[in-house]
Length: 162
Length: 213
Image 1 (cartoon, each protein chain N blue to C red):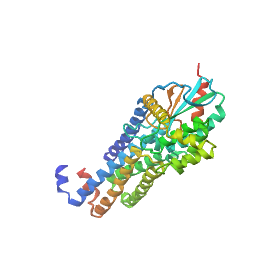
Image 2: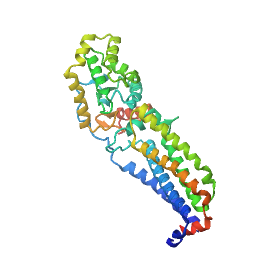
Image 3: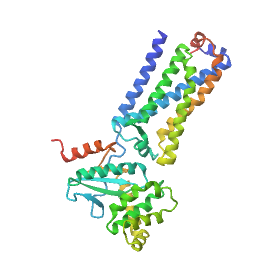
Image 4: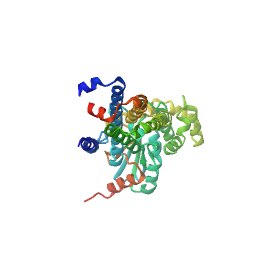
């Protein structure tokens, strides 16, 4: 594995790191959103620790759309990217690269939600901020992956490296 | 084969993660749980049936949007259950809400003239108006005038240390009751997991009124 990795050109190695970070950020976002979704449906309070504001934000009128918690949309969003990224790593299907610009949607929604927390609800939910950080990371990493994407080596070569 | 391992592994990790979160949420101790440290007394602002054995206590902050969103729910509850339960409102002004304390004091000052609940309503109804103000004093005074309160007495009470202490006592009582966020409700002395709708609230109250044998 190491010998293959060392022989990889710089660009694929950078892409490999970017994909690993992308997968990690997506998984963290998934865990975070899933936690908020689960607390919503179980009816358990959100554990804020020494932070304040979680309860204020998650019980606000902005926390759900037509009764569906926004966190559920977030969970599905991150699940979508995690599965798509795994699919790309497995098959090199370029649909992943084609859809990467859609991470801008998650980034934009995160900006709106941060704005609502800061200027309307006047409270910050640490879990919402973690989700915003995850979607921002996905957005930034999408540029890195797409930038090095055209230089990618054939799937078979890359697969043998991982 | 490798493909099966990759996908089975991915699905397994995701499912385990979700199952782990569900387990942790269900088994974690409720951070809000705790008994009401300060029993209901004549000092409290109460409405509903004062003789009722069912008591709902709310620790609330006038500047908290979630408290405002719970306000119509509690009002609706009291419309339906006013003869069966008693509702007590206590102040828990959060430090990040700079106008929570003055509004709490204003409600107390109105209470000294017999109009606590009227001021309570006006303050929540106009939260967006006074919330961003650097000094809400004049706005609160205009509410007092609109409610027909004695302006001079209201201002005198608003500046009194007694009412500041009353609000601070409520806050400290809430801290002793392990209130961590607003609003926090206690039903018959036990902290509630905040109901997310009127129907959830109603179910909790119904269960308290008709305990299972």
